[in-house]
Image (cartoon, rainbow, N blue to C red; front, side, top):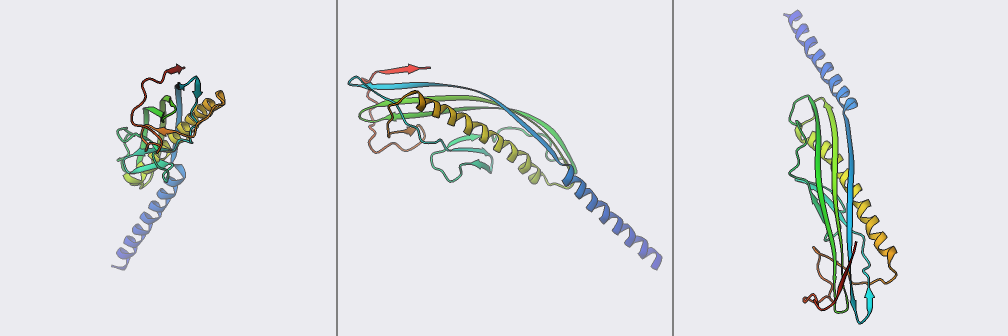
Length: 210
């Protein structure tokens, strides 16, 4: 009987060692890669009143990228540009012990800033198309939730970094092109300035510059 107990204890100990080794190997051998490419274009519209030209000054754009309950970006900012990728598929993350997959997703971004006051009108329209390619290999007892968090978090941060840089570059370039600046700026998803008027003043001529 004692011999049988010793054998059982030895088997349990061996299994524990194997499990610990598998966990260690899994942690050290988890691999991910994520690349992104994007194309952008923008157009500007300037409103003129009484032969004066007014050009907008833009506050830095806050951005939040969302996948279901995961959020990355300027989380404490108000009126952020929301990029929601909750409908995207990231492959076989439910597989036990060994999760290996590839994803290829496309994301479109539209960002419009508008000005509408008693003295001026203006619009900066930015559009972008993003392509994200990635691979992952997760070994060990990583749960489906943990695996999804790891993979998705990398994608969200990659998108945020790319969009933040591109939109900031376009807005800065717009400001550098013109010397006339205005303090009145709102986005199409933010509260209007207290000086803004509801009627968009159709009589003010607008000139679109690509």
